[in-house]
Length: 217
Figure (cartoon, rainbow, N blue to C red):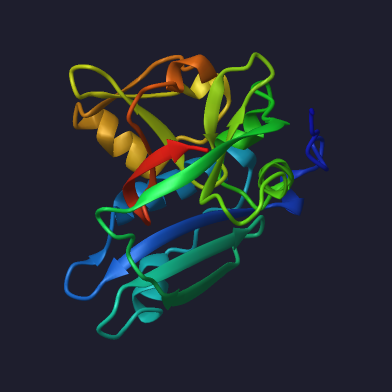
């Protein structure tokens, strides 16, 4: 099934940019510099007003307490920012997420999906194919290349212990955790087909939750 996202030709004014971050008592925001850098790059690329100069001050004012928090930042086309912080339970280190492969396709020729925005129709359609028995759903593009999950990037462990993650050219968001793992040499970008997943150790992950072991259902 091919899903064309509503408003493919819509103006950026109809969108919001989103960053979801983790805050820990004592250590503060995880990968905050990378999150704000991505926000600013997307704002510039899509013609949004720049983030407010006091954004970091607003973020700091939104967090307090002795428990981890999930901090969701949403910025409109005109640069208005809304920040919501909620309690966050970290994923257990021995957790194994169950993942499914969607029939819904992610169009690789639509550059909007390379930015984290409020445009979620394709991801919502992919998740709607499965019951709550799965923790994540992976999307392929129109060439049957593996792209990403609805909220994570995918990683395939190779024989030497390194991780392969689909390239941006397959049509996906450059996740913050993904970028860190590539810079650290723990992961590399490479084309992944669905057949490449069989018999391999799989992981999914994002900046909020970290790297999580996964298995296909």
